[in-house]
Length: 328
Image (cartoon, rainbow, N blue to C red; front, side):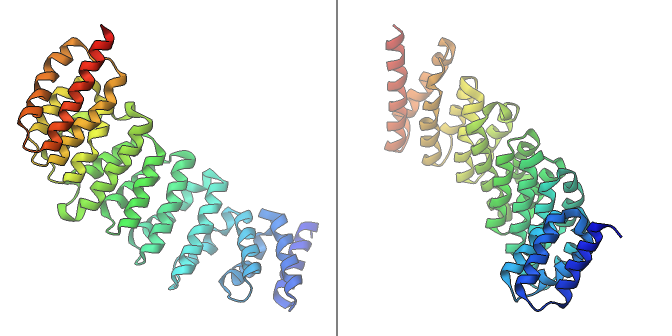
């Protein structure tokens, strides 16, 4: 019998027989120091985690289970089947911590978490699951985890869960994450478009955040975004796609954008497009761009039905004129 096994057996005996809280805590601390070698104590540690008596002892036991790592997965899977929401969330948290300590384990834990993220009856548990998946994605951009976040974004009906999924995809700042976000912005991804309004909005918000940091990542998707601007009935969505379109497309798409927004029925979209266009003034427009754009902007300044939109067009014209004077 090795020295380590003797130490583990002694700790197990203390946890089974001792009535002293201090002795139990000391035993769990020793098991924690032994890490993976303390696997034999899992049954006793799970009893503590499932108990309600000593929260400090529970915390120590949880830390020890995390240190044991992969061998603890089967025991923690049982927590996910509990009728108690808090126990399911605790199981998720511990599985997540184990995976984050060893990225190779993510491949084993993700399939366990997937059905919880998609189908758990409690939105709070689904929220916890999505938060953990987001941490996986941030650590190593696992493609399966990104796809799962995309499904949650499109399928879940709780706004907090959807928002957590969109936030995780935005933080990934990855071409596969952008693909899932764009798919979630497409009305065709939802069998019932009204049920997809939240997902579309949160996906557009995520894209907004990504483009603020990395506009080049969506250059190829500008035509799709222009189609949303032209066709989608959701006013908020049309406004949200303006920044990605203008930032990624630059002056080359401004004529097409202005032609679309002139016909937009919502004055807020028209005004937002004109105001967002000012972000391009750190880039120098060509004479060709100006020759095509200035007449359209002047027409908006003269003919738009809303004074606020006219004022935005006039302000944009003033910026153009001032920029031209500075060049002279």
